[in-house]
Image (cartoon, rainbow, N blue to C red):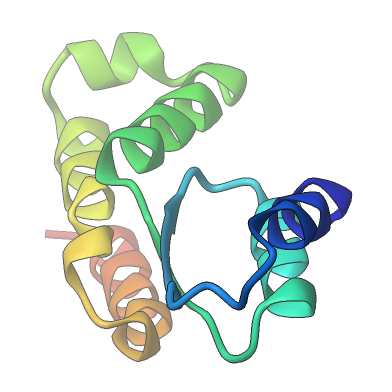
Length: 104
């Protein structure tokens, strides 16, 4: 937050920026919301993919992913979430979970 406040102070004028693309660290979004009025914040798809991959590794699923089976298919769908509107992501994730738990 102090970084953004310092930048604003050094500009000597109110910036016209209100749109930000960030990684998926929650602290950055919180800081932007505190410093800027109603900022539009979106995440970078590259960093989203990195975050999903790290979680996959953390859960010990990379071997299953590399076998290109159901774990691979599930994760590939999760990788596409940044292309959905934010309000649709929770519903899409719930549907994806339901479909993955249904025997086929």
